[in-house]
Length: 149
Image (cartoon, rainbow, N blue to C red; front, side, top):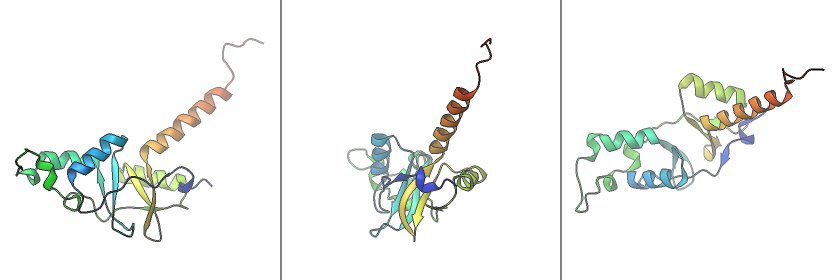
């Protein structure tokens, strides 16, 4: 049985609950990611911020005040927009079960925990990569229909 530990991203980029919307937006853009686990000082998972959360916060009434530079986002703490509690998965969980959990709950990712501590993240993109790899393997093993013996 393949487990989550075999394909998860270890040591994902994280932020803390007091970090800001500006920091989340910058981290997502810089590293081309869509999900940021929010952790406490001891690496305990306390929330999750998605790209959708960042976009929604930018369009909401949360950002109704501006500083002198016009930067609305610098006042918004991630604790005010993060999802909490967060659905998680253990690193020894099966890939099939995890894929089904993502699909059933329409999630883009699941933080991976061990004893309550964040150890990784697994995303829908990880499963797309597996699907592409499997399709390539199938296509390479199929006989060419135009081969004549």
